[in-house]
Image 1 (tube, helix red, strand yellow):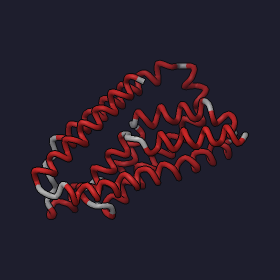
Image 2 (cartoon, helix red, strand yellow):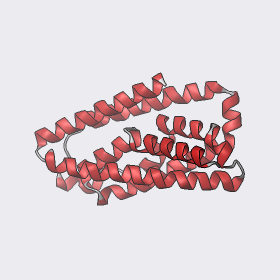
Image 3 (cartoon, rainbow, N blue to C red):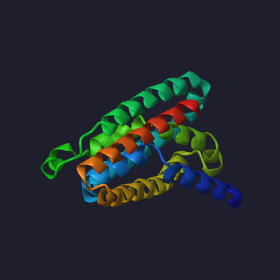
Amino acid sequence: MEAETFIAMVWFIFSVSFTPGPGNILSSAHGAQYGFRKTVNLLFGLISGWALLGLFVGFSIKYIQQYPIILDALTWICAGLIIRLAWSLGTAKPIKTEDEKTNNLGFITGFFFSLVNGKAWVFHLTLMGGFAQDWGTSFLGILSLVGFLSIFGLAAISSWAYAGTLLKEIFNSEKNAKILNVIFGISLVAVAIEIILT
């Protein structure tokens, strides 16, 4: 891979990974509700699902490109699930300390959430359909590219989760926590709309 192509790819990965998306917003919302330590399992679930999705797309990109209806269907399904999550998040009551052990999301939720993340699908399809050709499309090529992507992905969701813990300090009253939940919910709806329109 030429240096210019590599720089362009890294910029694309960085910009998509760190900008608002369903995984980042969920990480931030969870961090705001429960703190960073109790969000770690969710983060590992998100990045594991992200990596599996990357492998799937990487090894089946030629088939998916032949049938664009698959991507159209996935777009609407993913957007619908994200809007449902947005509603749940926006209408959620602030978490009380005694509820934290039972209500926080874990690895499984994060894992499956990544598999239906519309932004992640578009990201992997774009990357595997373009930059992967220069990186290498062999088994080890796709595997190493997904590993490279996962470093950025984990850094992104971790930073968003940490930012959420800072928001928790600002929105520490019940009234302010409700406002924060609504903001997160609206943000997810905006992401779902963006997914549909792109």
